[in-house]
Length: 164
Image: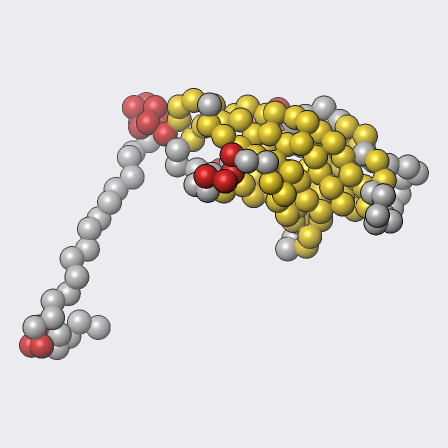
């Protein structure tokens, strides 16, 4: 790509190599510090269950993408809350949580997922996930976020996140 550029007075750009800290006890202390408070007020327009009579019950959790398959995700789940039918849209439910989840702040993570689960037996089933962008200063203000599963809109959540 850069062949022949020098004869025209052009030089190849310098490339800087930036290395991430290695996994050592001191490296971990730089990435974690403080607490991240995730506030979820409500989930709205959730698809109602086809198999149950009446509104369903829902739980929520928050996690970093790197924690997705860890037990900490399960440990952060809120208590179950019973939904109410959406007044404007049939086959949709709304659920008021008013929950604050505390999790360790990780400076290397850019996003927090808020996941909504329908309480089912024997395990809860995922309704959808919303992504909160930590680098966006507006994430500290309550706002609507799309709830998605398999690229499909599954409703929304009113949520915010801030470092304590």
